[in-house]
Length: 238
Image (tube, rainbow, N blue to C red; front, side, top):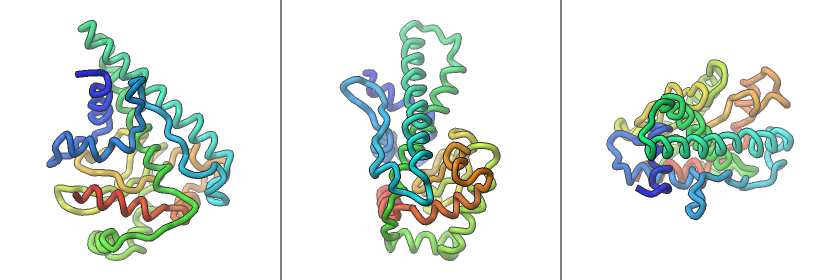
């Protein structure tokens, strides 16, 4: 196994993306676009924002976006590359003395890189439209879009400490589910494929919203790129 394959398998396992019922190749194709990777250098990379730093104002300000993307997300990329190198070195040396530490680092930084890479994509200055298939799924699984919106906001607001609110597709039940994640990697449902995520760590909103997390999550709904969420849903269903 070369370093590129090792890195991809490590991050897939660390983030819990090997969904039951999916082959490893199918699971890998779902997440590869969300894990920016330099195949030449053999390292994970920070993806550029698909819009300007101030494009989401007034809902998310330019300063927060710069700090969040350039510093916070980049720290997960750095941590992920460090952890994958350390695990590769442990395998080469057959020395697993610190493997518990490095496995935790893989999971934490890998999940942080994965979710942030989705987060930038599912927001935008243009809301787009929910596809017919996504609308039907929301109505089937939550009763209505307003039910979904209220449930998502309540769930994301209630995440203990730092973490994420997640709308995901659960292929075994062929249904949409709303999840909470503490940190990035705890409380995961390993059969689910994230479609829409909101970062509720304080660094994502505190400059504008202070401790009013619900206000931030409500504002988040004004900048969701529904075209991208719909595309992700269609891909997950294949």
